[in-house]
Length: 227
Image 1: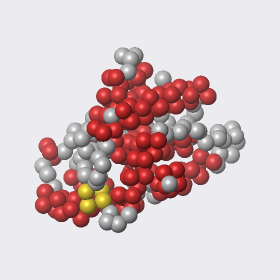
Image 2: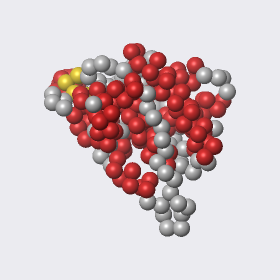
Image 3: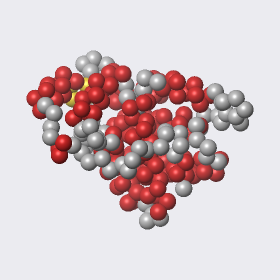
Image 4: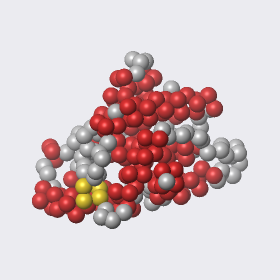
C-alpha cells in the first residue's frame, strides 16, 4: 500500500511534473545521450510521510499545511548544515538545496489544490522566498523529485554520487527529527481561508524577510550541490 501510494503521490505532485520528466528523457539535437534516471531511494519513513501528505491534500475533506511553517525550510537546512562538518562545502550544499527549493516550489512541488494557497501566501508575504514560509512537508516533496532534476544537471558521475550521498544524509536528518519537523494533521482548507479573511493583508513589516540575494539561478543550473 505504501509503495503504491508513494508512487501515486510522487506522480501527482506538481502540475507540470510530467513535463519535467519528459524533458529529462528528451535530449536536445546534437546533445550527448541522455543520462538514465538517477536512483535515489527514500527512507521508509519519508515515503510514509509522502503518502500521508498526499491523502490529506487530495482526499476529502481537503486540507492544507498551515503557513507560515515553523521551522521553515531555510531553518531546517541550516540546522542540518550545523550538524555536519564546519567545512564550507557543507554550507554551499545547504545554500544549493534552498535555491533548488525556492525555484522548484511554485513549478513542481505543489498539488493542484494548493495553488490557491500559494496565491494567498504571495499576497500576504510578497517579498518572502518559499524557503522562508514552507516547511518539512514540502521539502520532502523535493526529494521525491530530485531523481528527475539531477538528470538535467551537468554533474559528472563522481559529483553525482557525492550529491546523492549528501542528500541521503539530509534525508536521515529529516527522519531523525521527523517528530519535530512534520505535522501529523493538517488544517481544513475552509478554516485556513477563513483565518486569512479575518487577518486581511498585514503590514509589510509582518512578512518574513527575504534572505535571497537577487534572482536565484535556473532550476537546472545548480551544480554547487556537489561541492
